[in-house]
Image (cartoon, rainbow, N blue to C red; front, side, top):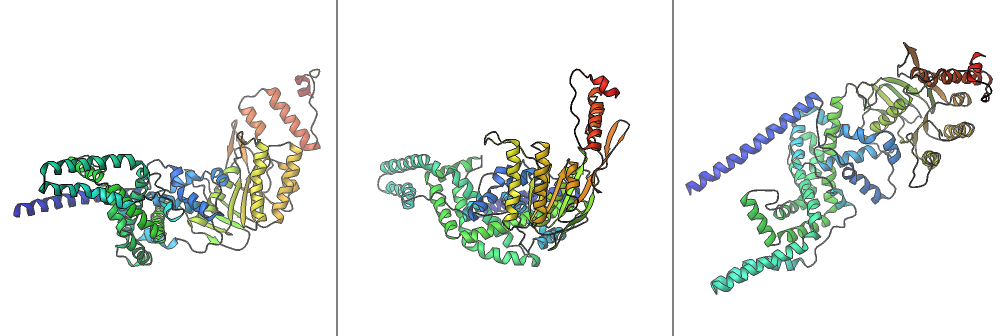
Length: 564
C-alpha cells in the first residue's frame, strides 16, 4: 500500500511539474508578444475561418454587412490577419464575423471588454492560457450546431450497446467452459472490429467536429470557474449554459481514448475504444445532448469567441502608436484627424472634414486610392471593433460599400464595363433600399469612351448627391471637377518634379488638381521625344481650345510638326 501511495505521489508530481512548466512557457510567450507588439501564428485558412459568417448569413437570409466586393477592394483579409491575435478557432471565426457584420442600428459595443483586458493583465493571462489549450483546428464548423443542425444521428444505438457488452458477457462462459468462453470472447471482438471499420466513415468527420465542440464547452467551463468581479456579468450566464452540456466533455473523452498518443498504453486504450464501439455510443450521446441544448451551446460558443476576439482587439490596440474610439453622429459628415492606413508600415497621416459629397483628383500614384481605402477601412473598424487608427474620428453609422478594383469576369461573360456598372449598381440598390451608406468609388466608369464616361459619371454623381448617404469619389477626369463644382467638395493630391524624379507628399489638399504627371512619367522612363513632345502639344491645345486636334498623316512628318 505504501509503495502504491509513493508511486501515485510521484506520478501526480510529474504531471503537475509538466503542466506548470508548459504554463510558464506559454506565459513567457504571451508577455513577450505584448511587450514587442509582434506575434506569429499559423497561416490562416480563411475558408474555414469564414464559416461562422457564412452560416449566419445563410440562416438569417438577409444579413447585411461588408459584402464580398468591398471586402476584396479594401484588402480586408490582410487587415483581419493583422488583427488575428486569437488563440482559438472559435475566437478567429467570431472576430472575422465581427469585422464583416456592420449594423448601423447597433448601439452597444465590446469596449468594456477591450478596456478590461488592457488593464487587467492577470485576468487576461488566465483566459489566454485557457484559450490556447482550446487551440485552433480547421474545418470543425463548430457554429453549425446552433444554426442548421444536421449532424448524422446513429440509428438503433442500443444495438451498439449490446455489441459492446458481448465481450464482457462472453467472459462469463469462462466459468462454464474455458474453451467456449475464449472462442466467444475472441469472436465478439472480431465481430465488433468488423462493424467498427465498416461503419466508422459515417461519423469519422463528425467526430472531429464534435470533439472541438466538446473542447469549447470545456473551455467555457474553465472560464466560468474564474473569480473576477469585472467578468461576473459574463460568467453568470456562462455557468448556467455550461451546466446541461457538461456530459459532452465526458463522452468526448471516452470517444477519443488513446487517440493522438504514441505509447503502448495509448495503443491499448485505442483498441479498447474500437473493440467496444465506444465511438458510436459516445457520439450519439454527444449528438443528442447538443441537439437538446442548442441555445445553451450557442451562448457558450459566442461568449468564448467574444472573449478571445476582445483580447485580440486589445492586443492590436497595444501595437498602435495612435488610435481612438469613434464618435457617432446623425449628421452626414465624416471627420478625422491624423488618420493612418492600417496596413502601411510608415503611413502618411491625413486629416479631413468630409461632407456629403467629395471628389478627389490627382496624378497617377499620388495617393488618391490609398487615401480613400484608408478612410473606408477605418470606417469599418470604427463600427465593428470601436477602434479607428486616428487621433479622432467622427462619422454617421453607415454601411460601407466600394467600387474600386473592378475586374472583368470571363466565366460570366462580363466585360470590364459590365462588371463596373454592376459594381456601381450595388451602391444604388443599397441607397434606394433606404440603408444608411457611405460609398467609395475609385475611377468611376473608366471602362468606356470619354464622352459617355463623363456624361454617365456626372449623372451618377448628381444622383448620389441628391439621395441619402455620404459618397467619396476619386477620378483622373478633371472635367468632373468643373461639372460638379457646385455640389461636390473638391480635394486633390499633388506632386513635384525634382532632379528628373516625381516626388509625392501623399497629403490631401483643398481644391481640384491642377497638375498632370502621366506625360512626365513617360519622359522619365525614356520614351522617344517624338511621343512625349507631341503628347504635350496635344494636351496643351486641348486645355486651351477644349477640342482635340486631329492627328496628322504620313505626309506631315512628326519632325515638321514639332517645329511648328
